[in-house]
Length: 239
Image 1 (tube, rainbow, N blue to C red):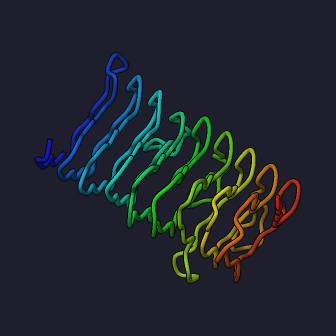
Image 2 (image 1 turned 180 degrees about the horizontal axis):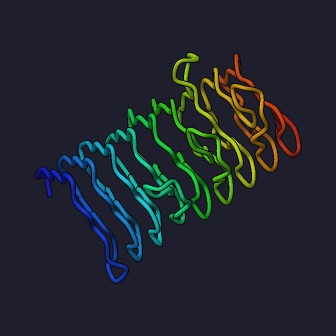
């Protein structure tokens, strides 16, 4: 508790384990590591100061690939739910960020092939999601997550990119590309949702963007949204 943990170029596996890597408090840095086949979460972070996970493969864990409950987390250039050969090797949920997280950055990852949702953000502020392939990979193969690509809930603030050079590519997910129940969603700009930059279909099963209760400070602009099963953008006002 309160110490630092650095893991580099390791393989952490064991279906009998409760979790692959767990940390309460302190600083965590994981780079170029395989975390796979743990019975519960691959990485479980609670009451931590900050965590950085880069260039790693996180697959086949029985719980979340990454579960983060407080502090700030940076995920960059990881494969979460897809193995090193590009095959689906899902966790239950790819990334689960909740409670009191602040300033989390999810950038340049492949988050696909998970049994349920690709990314859940359920609480926290100033979360940024950019440059990710969610439900697909860099060749736009069908590696859809089993539920929504991204689920946003609670009183949180999330920005989905702000320029074309680091767009998210969200396709082939079984339900919605983005599903929000958040009071404040934030900025959804310059993403490809259900369609590739070349105009080819990568449909999500339901809506590209589904806003259930997001009704303050939500901006949707500059996105290319198409081919989704039930429509592009749906807004539901329950008031």
